[in-house]
Amino acid sequence: MGLATIIGIVVAAVGILGGFIIEGGAIASLMNIPGFMIVVVGTLGATITSFSMSTIMTVPGSFMRALKGAGGDEPVEMADRLVGMADKARREGLLSLEDDARAVESEFARKGLMLMIDGTDPDALKSIMEIEMDGIAARDAERAEVFKMASGFSPTLGVLGAVMGLITVLGGLGGDVADLGHGIAVAFVATFYGVGFANVVLLPIAVKLKAISAEEQLVRDMILEGILSIQAGDNPRIVREKLMGFIPPADRPADEEEEPAVEQVAA
Figure 1 (cartoon, rainbow, N blue to C red):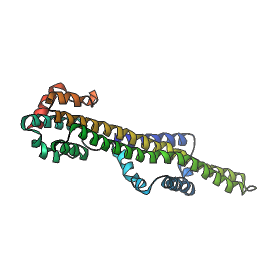
Figure 2: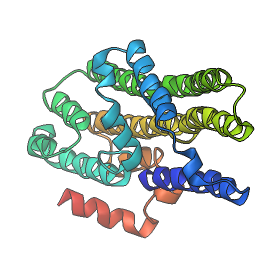
Figure 3: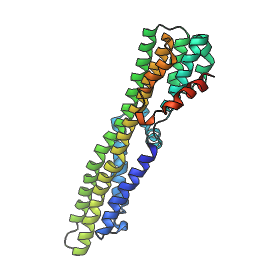
Figure 4: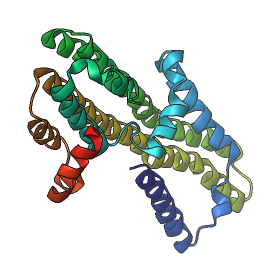
């Protein structure tokens, strides 16, 4: 998923700039520091005004997250691990899973497993973990909203930059017509920055963050279902069937590979 973000931005940039060059434009004519400052710095300021500083501080990490894609455990690997734990719990009891639970990298899964091992009531465990999931989803949504909101500010500030440039140009009417035309072209560069920045970077990043959040939420749903199944003492094969339902068919292991995977994790 992370590679798709980079490829998409590059393809969009090549398409836009390539079309501009084919039409006879020069890349150098798009270089305008005042317009860049009005759009980028202005968008940053408007966005900071709209959110708390704690949320704004997550922007660099959110941007890198969009570039790298979803983090955490792979769904198939986590499913295999939970199936192995289900098998071990049926043979040795839930307390035997304590070391395995502490070795899990996912903080969410580790928390749920430790609650299970501590003998937490299934309904209480489910309630606690669902509250945790809702909190994570809300924080992810807010981070995506930062980029979505910025994508609304950017084009508007681009228009503002164009208007400011035109004010300067029109204030000098009476001079050379060629200089007037050049000044108008430079003024509209700010609009190019604003619309381009919003639709090639900011809005796609917001959409990608929502997609990553949905993907990770699905894995958390799978983890919770696996933990509840282990706690209920379900047969490992039943646990596997439940967990595979959360994984797209194309990503599921082949049927002949399922049983060795269970034995390997259980060992």
